[in-house]
Image (cartoon, rainbow, N blue to C red; front, side):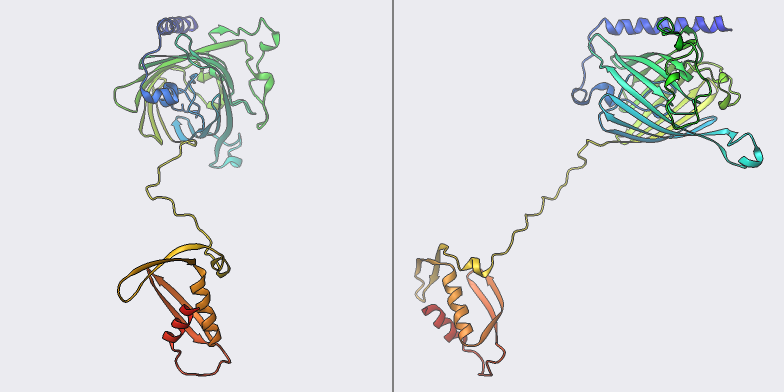
Length: 397
């Protein structure tokens, strides 16, 4: 059985390597104008069931645009997951995940667990090593579930190369990601400490540094994503390097076929929906919301309000400001004189004050000024004020 699996893996890997070699031997295909801004690898990426950018179960060397925020839910028996992924920098992707095991109780004691199922928290990091060039593939290294329990812990090195509408990926996985173990760990000749891996991990919440890139063997994984003519729709095919039957916390899961197939559809810029068939017998569903935090958003249609300015005070009005003022005589002659704008107002206020009248309102409509006055307290009652006389006296000052 092992030999048969190795032969199938070897033939699959040779075919994928040949495709990558063809891609490396030719310049990259022409890109549309949008690709020049964010890059083709950033435009069409989507998370896998774990929450990190990838295909279905496997990872790729692709990254989302700087500031990409994704929140989603995935379901493939026996796991339900809620995840949050952030591209904190152009070269770093961080994922936080909460997993429910629907086939496992919270503890080995049913009387203690009740109806509560087993839960696990996880955190992943992926780092960009190389951007894709006309001749070289993109390259990334990552740590999956590197804090604590080690149920899903694994490390990987993966390369991706785009060739037209096809995006190929090929990677090597340690731990959970490479538990099929087809190849001897290439790091063992460097140091014998890479030979042994602690399968139980840690108590949770602490990094398991001594486990990184360890294990007697590693596994290969990879796949291809095809961008269809239908905008937002891509098809995905992958080879999964994880042996599900070797992980006791996942329950009794048969490995069946290691191939997964599915599609991802983005009907809107903020929504990804993925459906797939994994290991030939399980259905997969993933829904994620996405937002680019550097996007300025929808432009406002209304112009901004004018700035608020302080209304001038009377003291400011009495300053020497020379303006041209005009008036019409009865004959209709228009004349212009240079005088201070505050003189008529100051003269009017002085006449009102001398007659014991206070200003209560002032309304200016074009060349017509309407004022309201009242007698000051203590000035007595002298009948209605003669406004014509007051105006004439003010104008004669």
